[in-house]
Image 1 (tube, rainbow, N blue to C red):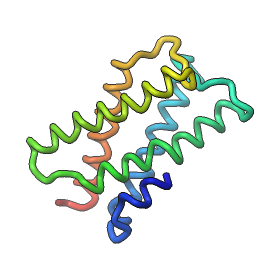
Image 2: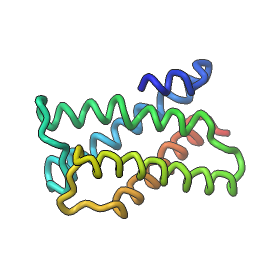
Image 3: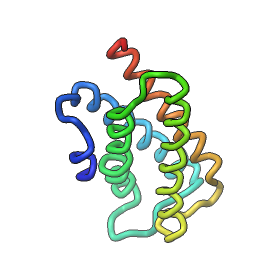
Length: 135
């Protein structure tokens, strides 16, 4: 989260806070479904319970990326598609670092599911932005 403080314009918090909140809700909801309930993946056994670890990750790691994504959102459609692809690849790469370092263990999960999840989440926060701020 601290890195996002340097990459966002604090004057745009009215726009960025909803993106942060929606990213957090989506991430935690997906963790409840796919981690806790269906056991598609899980985080490494840590000194804190998995649910608390998931909450911390979906509060302080994922949502700041949503804020940064919204901060630099391009206006035209072609640029947006490229922007969406780059962000999806970036987020998948960050997840891959966790997975390769065995901090995130896949049972029935894979990178394809992650790509679909990231695209859906980024499209959702973009739609939220366009709805709330009518740009």
